[in-house]
Length: 253
Ligand SMILES: C[S@@+](CC[C@H](N)C(=O)[O-])C[C@H]1O[C@@H](n2cnc3c(N)ncnc32)[C@H](O)[C@@H]1O
Image (cartoon, rainbow, N blue to C red; front, side):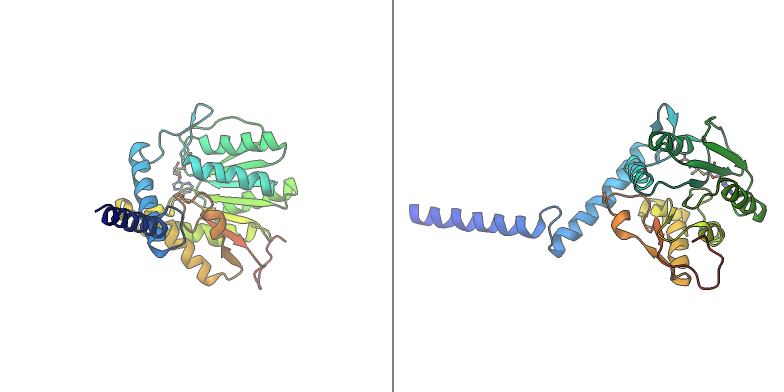
């Protein structure tokens, strides 16, 4: 009897070890990967519900419409790449603008331009310039170029967070990509709407635009390591890195 009990115990132990090996979080088996992806999608959806789609996230007391883990990643990119100028489309209440300016303060470097067709609020800060109007207006792009020239800015980071409809984002990508230097990024926010079932009513959105842009612009690549650094991101296809200059263009080098 003891022998049989011992055998059953051993078999159960081995079975548990096998299940753990096949399913452990972060494991390399296809089942682990599948379960992790499902868990991430579910956690992202719950997070959106709990924060009312990040609307109640705050930076230094100001409403900042950003997902905290993604905002932390932006802070890392700013620290690593130290852009001379951050161009943000979509000011809203200026919480994200202020966040970027505060990081620049800590780094002792960088300016921010924030563009909105109708901002709800602005926060005054010596590093921030607000521009009112549509991000896809040619005159707006010219204003940004003028500011780049004024500052002599070489390293420009573009963050797209305005109208999230694919057609608008696609146009922004075409207009602002030439401002990004070799090795620099365009950060496309909120591709989550193309991915999460709960946001499917908002499609096609930024991820669709980014995918289309990458197909016609081989000089940019999806930086998937950066995108997935913290696994949970609301910006799939969110980090487009300039890997080469475009053949025909006058892109900033
Ligand atoms: C998602 S909110 C921006 C959130 C902000 N970046 C933050 O994280 O706190 C989107 C903003 O884009 C603006 N917007 C919509 N269409 C636009 C356009 N064509 N050009 C510029 N801004 C636009 C809206 O007025 C709104 O304030």
